[in-house]
Image 1 (tube, rainbow, N blue to C red):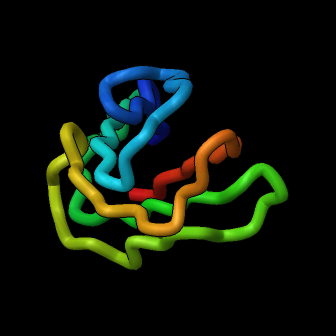
Image 2: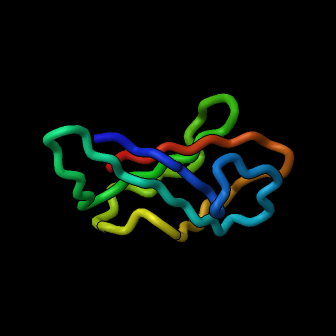
Length: 86
């Protein structure tokens, strides 16, 4: 099982996001002989130095599109990355 098409605010590489309310999305793909069923996710945002700036914690949900999260403390003109585990 793997994730594909990760998006933030419906973009795969957003630039200039000016809000702390973000919409995340991903597609769960199953390998041969696997079933792809998500029961929870954990989403983390890191700054360009790799420091953790947000952690959703384990969130029980089958949703994987339009996940609205408030990520406080994002600074303008900074590069951030995000990862999700299901």
